[in-house]
Image 1 (cartoon, rainbow, N blue to C red):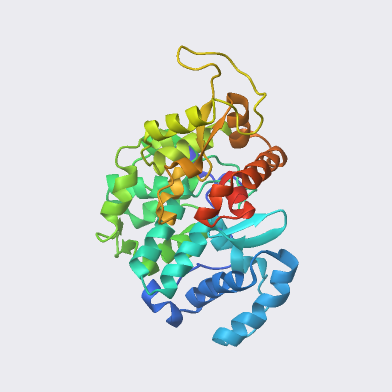
Image 2 (cartoon, helix red, strand yellow):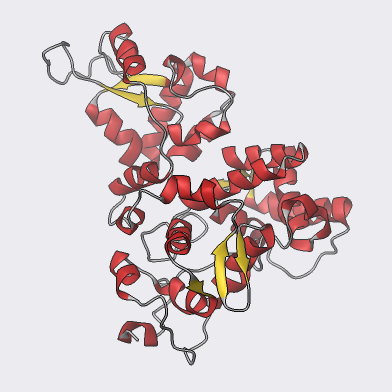
Length: 368
């Protein structure tokens, strides 16, 4: 066994699970029968009802809602733990001390209301594939990776002993860890630690939802969802699921959730805008062989959210020309700078209203 796996790393260097329990303890079609499933969906319903709410007001009001709807009696649990697991997977956005439903959180809840549980679960899987360390729910985790994408690819590529999964997966820090450790080798006497929460809260929740199967020895991906998960990950390497700096995140995420672009549509938009930057027409770059000023096409609502909208996102209404500097800025600048650009886009790009998005939706797409 590798020496590094005999030792428990310092806090922040292993996969952790936020909250105080697994977010789901039943299949979605039976969500009203599971206490934790009731609580999670109740939290989403509450946010749908109240809209954006401060964390303090959330903590004051959530118990009353859960009591009225499901008869959940108040206890000493931290109220922030009620939304942290859902924030971890991106169903709840946490921006500037306010919480609200994310785009896919809304999608998920809509399909629950329509009793389309398979489609709801696919929205959940999409969020899992995009979940990264760190995020707003796990800011203290000192890792740079997409944990569920790694987990699912390991399960697609191997038959994994569940004890190996529990003991080793939480300590994968980089792609070398994936390649260098033996799937069939683990230390049964390994020290117990809070990394077990990833098993008892996260893995057990995926089993309860029917995404994973677990028997006495192995954990596998459900045959029902294996083709769907495989369609995103089968052509990716493990290196695609790790990043070393902030600039790589968008690129890596786009590899996982990828949708094709029609370049002719983008070129039409650039020509109609006279190759001028949408943010500031005075942003001049350089001439090329076929245009006076070089600009780049940018999809305001990222294409990875294509399954969240009935309309295609690869369309003229969703594309703007940006100079290279503004294009980099909207992806990689600090949130304060991004916010100014997003406000300009939201104010001037009137056709965005056809997608029924608000400024907070745009912040969700671009903020860290």
